[in-house]
Image 1: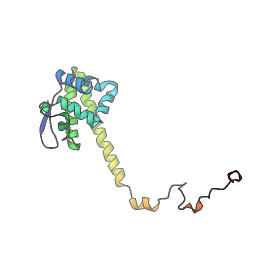
Image 2 (image 1 turned 30 degrees about the vertical axis):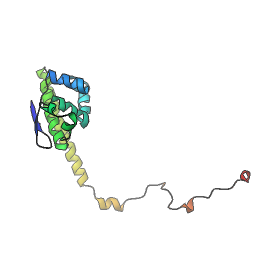
Image 3 (image 1 turned 120 degrees about the vertical axis):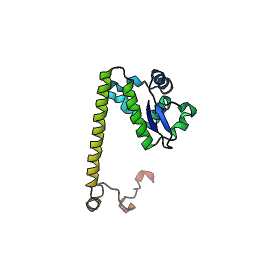
Image 4 (image 1 turned 30 degrees about the horizontal axis):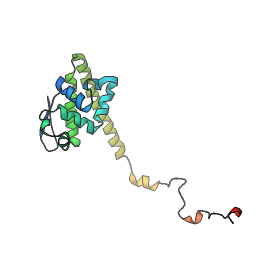
Length: 163
């Protein structure tokens, strides 16, 4: 079981068991064991979809049955989603039977976090180097811009056949 708190501060315990995995499969259509197939592509897709992800978490949390899925999801925002994601990934890793697979998944997760940190730091440095004044001074309108007035638009001509 992995604990996390929602936006209201309420603690939740996320647990992946065969029974909870079956609930997720039956209610949400997500097969937890398949999430690491194809380079964990399905896991990435699930984590990138906060609506489906929160539904999955709902069925994995003890005590969530006291709320409707909608009520449960009301207290899921940025920090809550991050905490639930960390809890989910750790619990998913522990759900696998093969110790070697668990070790490989832990290594992959750690490298992924390092990569994310490095990319965010790099982007931060690049943003800091942007000089808005320099960009504004060098700004040029897009070529092919439309004329400012209708004076440059020719008037329709009257053809001989219309008279």
